[in-house]
Length: 151
Image 1 (cartoon, rainbow, N blue to C red):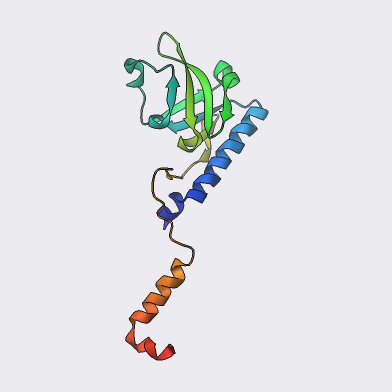
Image 2: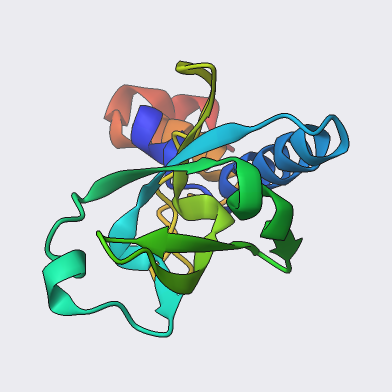
């Protein structure tokens, strides 16, 4: 099932690596780009006033161009950049976990979509690799007619 894939830790790591590789590629080509990300997972330093925070939607688009692009970097599992907010252009350093980036956008077109919903804190729903064999054997043994095949 799809949820077994998108909630899988290894799949999330592939998505994270892909996001990191693409962002690094954009940096090397000096290509401005946008990120559509889960705002609840982002942090701001200094914290933004509530009047600005209340304007963010659950999925928020940041466009990295100009000064914001120049300050952008990847540090560990985070994309970090400086941006100005509100009418006063209040400056803040934004830290975005790579896995909270849902889309990478160039020229208003998505070039990457992250389907991963894995959370480090969630328990994996991944079944052991041999669970298919166990489930198959359990089904086989559940039928009393099949007992004659087992010695």
